[in-house]
Image 1 (cartoon, one colour):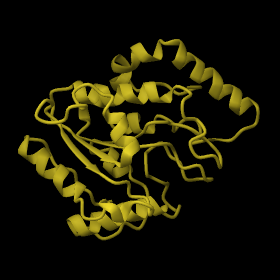
Image 2: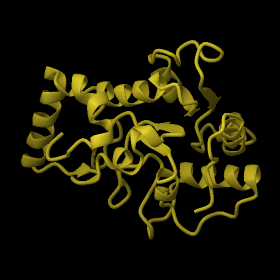
Image 3: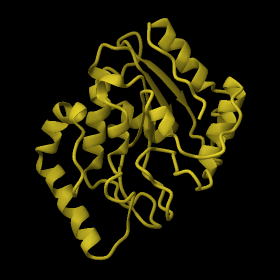
Length: 231
């Protein structure tokens, strides 16, 4: 993982997987890719941003993405999020459209979802890096074991949380995690599944799925503070 340091709140949960040869190979491979002159997104220092902004004991909602945006200046370490000043990509624009329909919240003027992350929304991609211009290029290199361990750590807690699973990829990853594979009532958590917000699939059931209000209803019913989805 290069120079990235695991945030303290996640360290105990991730230590076993980080000690594996696969994780060590990932760090070496990323350094070699950059030494060879390949551009990797997001830049160093922001690859673990999701874990930094959302401590394990503060997670209320998990939104699981696939891999970072692969265009210049887009990826910032939070799934679906882009820095302020960067136009929201189509999937994020559709997320905002559903947010407005679900909660009556006007479309934000930016694409930075850090405000959600700071409230306990873990915005986690299953692969935390990508080569510029090559979607999915770092899949299978070792990130998946680490991010699966993050999801498993949230699922292992008795504190009720919401897992928002958009698309087949996120749903397949979650199905690998103990206490999520069977769904309620075997777990204390809420699973909200729908098609991906991509323009290719959003009209197949993402629009109208009301994930934001459903997440807050569950949190409030279990004595947890709801998320303020305004940005």
